[in-house]
Length: 88
Image (cartoon, rainbow, N blue to C red):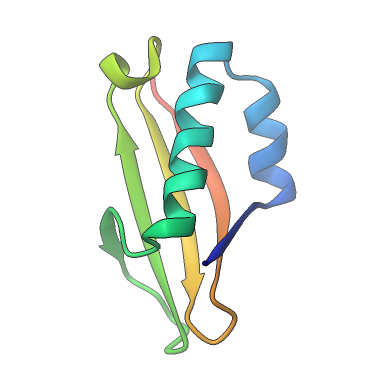
């Protein structure tokens, strides 16, 4: 099982989300532990990891659209959620 963690900046943003938005983001974090290759790939300068984004629609969050940007390392078998980008 892959481990998924929030970066310090993502944790700070998480506290600013509504309870339904937080629950939607937490469900993404849990699902990354089962399938770390979700979402759309992003350009990545490190050949040993993959950067990806899972986009949550307002219907899924009960609020704003949220992009969950993370990096997955196969060597560590871990995901680090780097940013949470909340739309209007």
